[in-house]
Amino acid sequence: MEKVTLNVQGMSCDHCVKAVEGSVGTLNGVKSVKVNLKDATVAVEFNPQDVSLDKIKETIDDQGYDVK
Image (tube, rainbow, N blue to C red):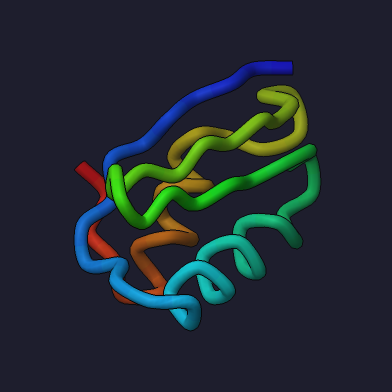
């Protein structure tokens, strides 16, 4: 398992949390995903053999948020 913390701009409410955690959490290989609105971060634990970091970033981007 690999753990990363991504800086994500544009998240401001519970809907944002549900959108990001819901979409990333359904990806095959993602064990956990936790949004921190205060810090504007998304912590993800995933198996890099099942899902790429680029795919995780793309999924967040598809929800309308800017991954730095």
